[in-house]
Length: 453
Image (cartoon, rainbow, N blue to C red; front, side, top):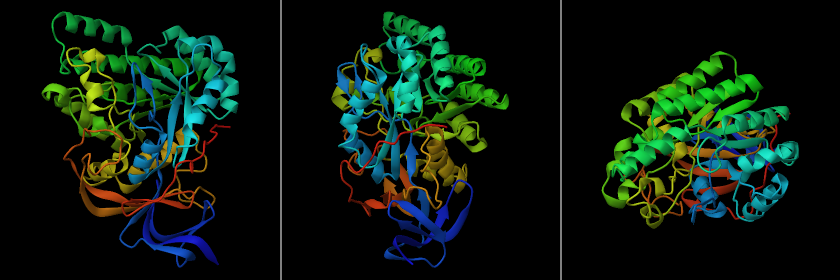
């Protein structure tokens, strides 16, 4: 039988094993993983790694924050992600005060559906206004939002009682709570103290969000998970204190997982000491921390105490970041990473011997898909979506705004060298990127209704 597409002679890397085989695609799905397959179209992957498409379950496209909107829209952001080997994302919904969760979902989908170049899902945010709408959680879940975002910071912050109510509601539908865990009372007090003392530069951003209190916030979430039985995923972990709380929870058999991001694995807090506007660019929350924290995160990925690498991709332009000069608390927070994540974890994780090939694929592809409820993604198996990447482990590149495709005029990884980069990205059997050329189209991606039944 001649399949529609066969990727031949590559080294297939899954979360469990590495082996030589051909991968056949029929229509939108993987049809066979064997040797000596033939297809109407054949791609020679000799010398390449064949992986599942990477899955990023934490991105912010077209996200309003204060007076700004994140620089990548659903087209430019998914296009950039495809260049980097990502074939599925999960973004966010923030309902307006008088808006139902299901109506907010429809509104967000109206923005995304015509623009996405590959498949996507959405987390439903539960802020203070949604505590009175918790009876709508089953309807949101039934409409495809299997996961719900809870904040412990900013204007969307929930107090502990509200967190308890939200987790109980999420647990009743077997949804997943994804949590921004910080101690907002401590943070706001330290910001006030620093600004009053004239400490206004980005240097004081990480000093106003101490690592022990990130750990303390994670500990509270873990205990709430234990009490409610709700499944909880901790977003953007930056420090050993938070890792320890996740590990302790998991050792108790609790349904708790955690992620970190490239900025925390590759950078240290000295980036905030760069002169002028350069120091404002890497501001994100929780903050990038010291070398000891960076090394602890790599160890946590290697030993399984952290399960996922996402990006928290939320870029703002240099001009927008500069509006916070003179008051670090006013800098719009977020960095661009959606294109470089997959290759960066390979280069600095696998390339240094910290991670195996299978751990790389597990952290960037398989476990994110499973956590997010993408039941047909993240694996190279017959019947799964044909989301595939041909990855060249020998290609050396230097990250720069000229090389990357994110719609922003800077990158926190400027000048950083990587060894290993995706050559071809395939979504549901369609080639999106091939040897540096974008072949996809806006609107090809679909909203994926996610659940855990």
